[in-house]
Length: 374
Image 1: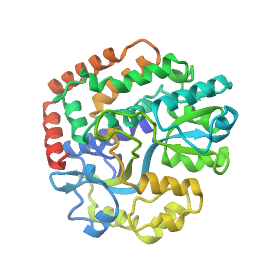
Image 2: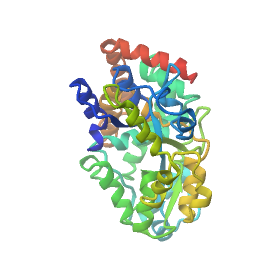
Image 3: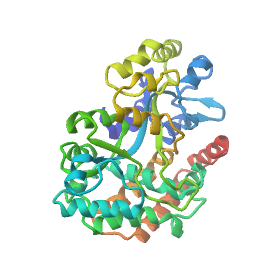
Image 4: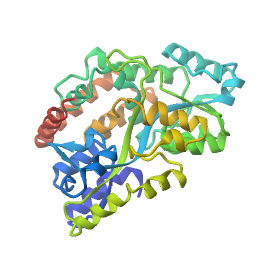
């Protein structure tokens, strides 16, 4: 299944009363919008509490005291830098940039040395979601503030909410982004980094093992984008989440599906997730400190996926905001067509449009915020 139809394909199948028993679910609004359509079964009565708790589903999988998704594997949002490119650019490969000015200085030195500072792909939109996740969160005081923005209870046009687009504009105007960014998808942009041809890239934790295989052991440095920020979440704080599974409300085999999800959290299956594809299980019973030998992967586990992390802001936004605001704003900024103020106005207008078109969803979001005490 293509990444861009993970949500829509399940909803389309459900609308046709043809949904599978077990479904892969991203967290947050990507799960909740299907819940509010009545397509996802609560798990409280189907799966034992100890398994539910150990799965690390996170609070964003709950609504009105009901759990709709089990965690399966851990997922962190981070940036990576190429240590060989750092060395060749006269930078200290053992020290990642810690401030926005340090980051810009590193990009400038990498460009001067003849390398691409930052590689990414924005044709399919997902890089824009990662940018928003790694920047806007640091201007917020809580995850609830993000929900207030997405439902229109706060105004995107306030100065506080402009900086994430202003800093992307800064990178674009300095020539630090690849020129073909708008014509390639997310993963080909990351592959430029993995081939050793750029200094930085945004990535997720699941891609780090492959990055180390291609660049060489210890050659991919891990970092929080040093965006700075104006909120309580400001600073070099990691961002992470978990991916997971749920059960269709249309399933005629809910108990069997629940047994399968419980089986995925057996010790054997949890260990297999690490021993095979080298992905971090979300299950809290898995001891990464003991299992992981590679120093970079051990850092990834201890400082991101097993740390006190910030919420993944992208999983809080309504689908309309993703496609008509975030995606469009990111592309228009990278193309040089829009200013941060124009991005903010577009975000505001899309939010107002969504409020009018989906009042029931807006109310669900407001209840969700209160329910989670965010």
